[in-house]
Length: 114
Length: 115
Image (cartoon, rainbow over all chains, first blue to last red; front, side):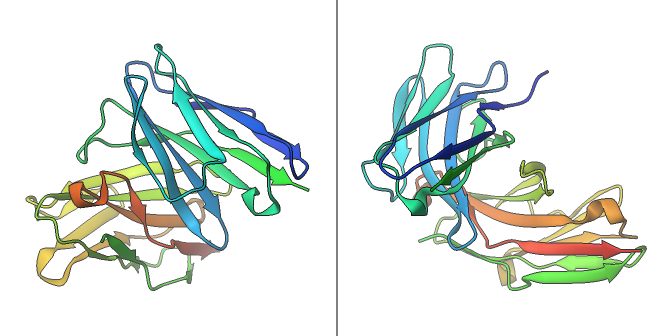
């Protein structure tokens, strides 16, 4: 069974631009979560989607948004990019939401904002 | 509030040594789940183990073993006879209803295994 896939793997953008990242979960998984990883803040939760609905959101500004499609694939968007948005963005999928479900992570998208 | 503390920032060992990675967690929930993930240089977080708060049985999987103790709020991870391929950053994480069911990660422990 294929794992979580994320595209693109690498991105370079300039301040003020916007970016869209894509995540395809493991087949059969319906819950998708996004995390941001930076050297200074570590791994931080962005949001979680299940059945096309956002179930949970982390403490990030409104510039960060996401959505989930009927096939469980998810996208996240960051508008008006700032230098501090440079990070590794990780997507994780699980069968369903809920504390006991294991989240499996993709390889991540490395975003560099210049 | 949920919190995970990994006090060891970096550990260096020589191959074949045993090494223990410490994890201390905080939560007010009675039902919660603990996880360990491994992050090699490629960046992908690799799932290693999940434990729920009602199961304090320790587990051994090959060279890996985990010691869960609710009395000390700890979930430590031991690698026996370490190998160079074990070099990675290891993250302990907590998931509980009080935390909105999101994964709360520790800051990670960088493990370097040298020949």
